[in-house]
Length: 106
Image 1: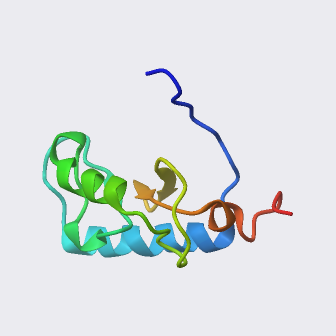
Image 2 (image 1 turned 90 degrees about the horizontal axis):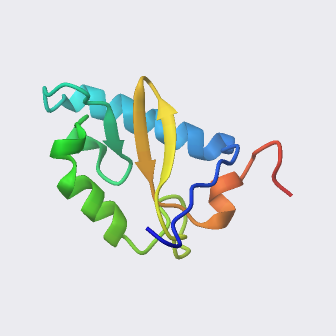
């Protein structure tokens, strides 16, 4: 789709810690049981670990969330992905929280 882009950034320690905590909570809650499950929503880790086919609700909720999951600022467009605990954790963040405590942050 025109205008879409993927940007690789070095995530800061705060966002990585949030992703790791979400992964632990999601694995504790369980999985959808389908092959290729390995996705976690940092907005609702209690929903467990799910596959792309079961991710409609968690992804919709993340995309409709206006606020950063780490602070009270508006979130940047799109989702942030962080690998943690063997899962791909999806988050919504603002630009500041995205790289806070990162080696390349200002």
